[in-house]
Length: 139
Image (cartoon, rainbow, N blue to C red):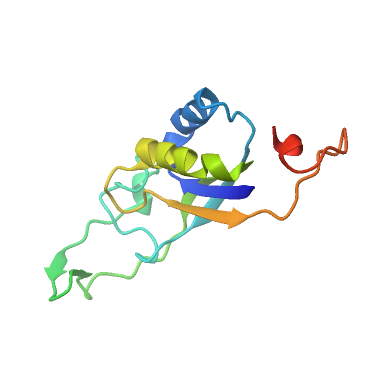
């Protein structure tokens, strides 16, 4: 068994839940989380989340650098945490790739802030109501 943890944009939650349910995986936990990636917060034209108020975004001037782009250092530094949704589910090993591909397909925009997916091993699972263990507990 594996645990899949996906951190996604808020506006992609309903579509992601629908796809997972269509694949036969309606059971999952969802949390509201705040975080930031390597961009160290949000300095954008509101690409990270179209539902966020404009006060979270500032327009920036990008300066080309040899490796990529760097923010103009004259601008004030913005270090905000971006609101996201975190989905967690435990699935059989043989279905991990299928589920991860489905999550990526729904959430990939090609822009900063699309999210992350983590896959971790699960040592055991127990359904409290029936005491079923292993694969029976997650079915």
